[in-house]
Image 1 (cartoon, rainbow, N blue to C red):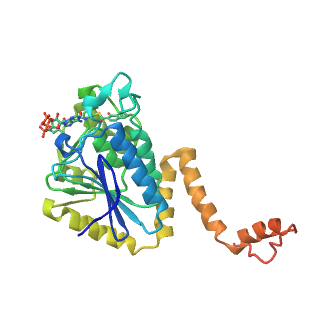
Image 2 (image 1 turned 30 degrees about the horizontal axis):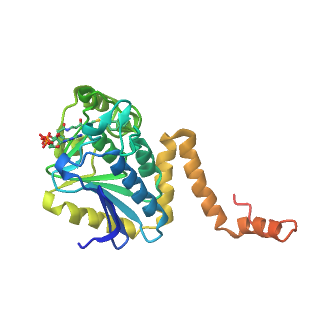
Image 3 (image 1 turned 60 degrees about the vertical axis):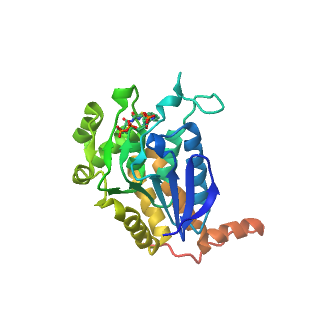
Amino acid sequence: ISWTPIKEFKEILFTQFGSIAKISINRPQVHNAFTPLTVQEMIEAMRTCQDRTDIGVIILTGEGGRAFCSGGDQSVRGHGGYVGEDTVPRLNVLELQKIIRSIPKPVIAMVAGWAIGGGHVLHVVCDLTIAADNARFGQTGPNVGSFDGGFGASYLARVVGQKKAREIWFLCDQYDAQEALDMGLVNKVVPLDKLEETTVAWCHKILQKSPLALRMLKSSFNAELDGQAGIQELAGNATLLYYLSDEAKEGRNAYMEKRQPDFSKFPKFP
Ligand code: 1HA
């Protein structure tokens, strides 16, 4: 598989293969721990994936084969948060989580090695997770003085159930790929040397499906859990579909032509 660069960044690699985009954290020396810059770059790459009509599915991963992501880089954690080059404590990883959930294209976490702490939450919020047999999962917050009570708690509980989610956070144990599969935390486990090939095969299956159907499904899955914000997302997609119809266009045309709209020809569906 030959990945073509989309844009050069400092702490991530951003590439594509056909309609598949790959966003890969490139800090293997610290198990792909993220800094404010890493997160800012991932957000920019996600936004590009959202805007590009040729991209249909996004892989989120980490370089090196030994880690997906080990969470926030503890060496830049200062007073009040993770400090960026601008000296402002602002990590923005919660914003990244929201984008992964709301971007109207499937996001697949491709996990080799560690998915730990805030790195674990990143895979949890992805639509699907494919794990290599060397993958290890867990939260560390209560060990290192942190916690993610947002999606990291509530969505994790939706995925693995309340008892298991509380165990994961209260004990900070690590779970291997098979245990993760057994608790429904990942979709599939494959040998490390088959990880990318399998993930790309899943992407190709997804790319054969109706993009609008996938978009509606993703926002529908979110809507049940995300309250008014989830309904807003689903409703935004309903508006998109409505705008594509002649009925909605009649309203706009009538306004632009300074006449009364004639909706009489449109069926009142049962
Ligand atoms: O909780 C949040 C948030 C909550 C709310 C809102 C936003 C949040 C954002 C982030 C987070 C968090 O991510 S908190 C959790 C932060 N992460 C961790 O606690 C994991 C720390 N790392 C480890 O426990 C271990 O490295 C490991 C279990 C993943 C792997 O252990 P291993 O194989 O023994 O490797 P190790 O030698 O520890 O790591 C290799 C190198 O990577 C080490 O550096 P070296 O001694 O070679 O110089 C290690 O220090 C570095 N490293 C690993 N993870 C991190 C790290 N350096 C900085 N930050 C890390 N997270």
